[in-house]
Amino acid sequence: MITIKEITSKGDLTTFVKFPFQLYKDSPYYVPSIIKEELDVMNPQKNPVFKNADAKYFLAYKNNVIVGRIAAIINWIEVKEQKKPKVRFGWFDVIDDIEVTKALLKKVGEYGAKHDLTYMEGPVGFSNMDKAGILIKGFDELNTMITWYNYPYYAKHMEELGFEKAATWVEYKIKVPKETKEKVIKFSQIIKERYQLKLLKFNKSKELLVYADDMFDLLNKTYSSLQTFVPIQPYQIEMYKKKYLPYLNPEYITCIADKEGKLIAFSIVMPSFSKALKKMNGKIYPLRFLHILKAQRRNDTAAFYLIGVDPEYQNKGVTALIFKEMNEAFIRNGIEVVETNPELEENKAIQALWNGYEHEQHKKRRTFRKELKDLS
Image (tube, rainbow, N blue to C red):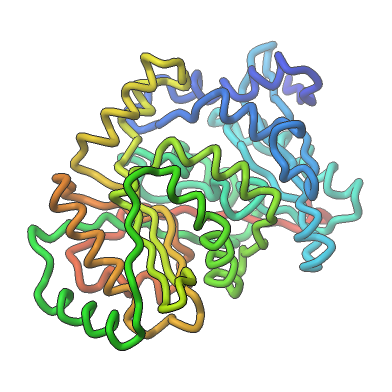
């Protein structure tokens, strides 16, 4: 018999966060999240997203053993301002039992129907800055710090339950050239002079804080036309600064300003923390955090997290400056491979950026949706 329990205590929420550690304990590819960070994300007192969102968390039990989890989320900006009557689901993990999946998704549907919403979609988080998508390709690859890992049967469960494909993301593995191409150097110099642009250099990650708000503003401008876009709110930015600043290595950050000093483009790349996070196994006390510090300094793999370009400068070759700076930083630091963050499949402009490099599309993930009236 399957029982679904709504989370009502801090202890139960910790159990909710820790469930994947048991589910994936034998997987060499699962990279766990930091337990404290996950709990903070779900805490209305610590995550400002709850100013415009609500959430419920559920655990599934079978014979008194935990067999699944799911979060039901409503982003009210998406519902009220963007007119999308959607209930989101996320933090979805389950054993290979379609009846458990069905029971968990039914709870999300009931939560959505209670608020007069008409369809559900997931897995996603609260906003665009959270993890999203069921992995459908790349099961023999480590997940990155900003993606979920799952077993192959997840997508099969969705399809068997009549869920339709919604958004699809692709990820690429790019081989770093051993030297920066001469034509890239020349072209980037031409673009720099033509538009009177200047590169901003940073010695410490804290120096980036001056430009953090401008970066998020550029993200909103860059991705506003994409189907999954929900504007990042000002009060969310502070949390993201605190969450990601400790992981940043300023040598891998490229910022470009115009002649007035206004930020017009940026990219954030980090050394890959997948192996370090796997060693930390969800814990962040000082000795375990040494794995992060080591990964920042000695690594042959990097992860391309964010890129933003002011619409006024898109299609003007500004990305050539970014790639030149990144490539030179990679060469200096022994980076041989770069993984991209998930990119929407229809975002051909971003994917075209990799055409000048040796690359392969090694992962793919997808969200699924269903009308609430069709849930059985």
